[in-house]
Every structure is written in C-alpha cells, then in structure tokens.
Length: 155
Image 1 (cartoon, helix red, strand yellow):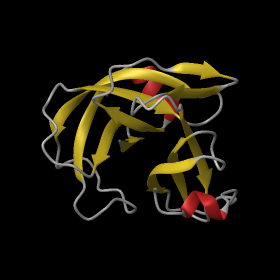
Image 2 (tube, helix red, strand yellow):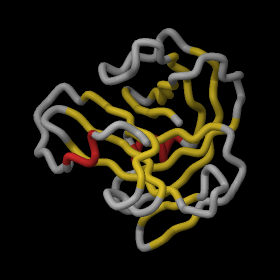
Image 3 (tube, helix red, strand yellow):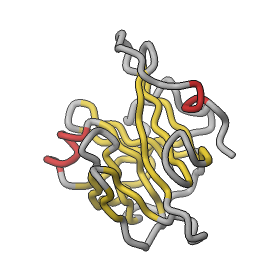
C-alpha cells in the first residue's frame, strides 16, 4: 500500500517498495466521506513527483494514471497494489479482505496539526489492528481529529 496525492492535476504514488512495473494495476481508495474506490495504473517511477514530507526516506514515487475527475475530487487516496479481490461498501466505508484471512480491512483518514494520517485497519478503525499508516504533509494548519491509536505502529 502507498499514499496517493494529487497536486496540480498530477497524481503520484509514494511506495516504500521499489520496482513497481509501469502499467501495474492499482486500486485507489478515497478515505474522505463518502469513501469510494477507483481503478488506476502505475506510470512507472517518476522523479518529477514531489516527495511527500511524511514519506519514508526509501520511498519511491510513481506517476498514477486513472480517472482524472475521481483523482481530482479525491485529492489524496490509499493506493493498493496487487489486490485482485473485491471491495465492498459498508455504511459509507470501503472494506476489503486484503490479506485473505477472513477479516475485512477498513480505510481511515484523520487530521493532525499540519497533515493527514491515512490508515488501514484489520477490523473496524480504532478497534481492530492497525496494519498500515501513511502521512501526507499539507503545509498549513488543520483542525486535529486523530486519536492516539491513529499514530501507533502497524501491528
């Protein structure tokens, strides 16, 4: 999983693993309400994609090709690489059993003082296990609404 951000009509995926092939299928999850899913493709590594201030130092940036209207409306998303299963809508939230263990993963975002924390949970957010965490630095103040559980290390 990785963080997708859209700036100046350019979508970029920040991913901690290098070597994502160009034209790889992606599923893009918008975490703002109401959550939604769209399909996209990687455009290969792209040095012109801005490095997100919250990304790991080893992160590689990839261009993302997808529905421009959906990407522009989302602004940011969680990029899921290599998942061929189905996504479900459950009360305005998107879920999927990403690891095939029979427990649905949920997607969440919350704000800290100057950025957004995007997370994936096995089980309901803040109740289940935190599986993935990404941070998107915004560069301006926002009203924080994260809980201490949103910052914990993935389990």
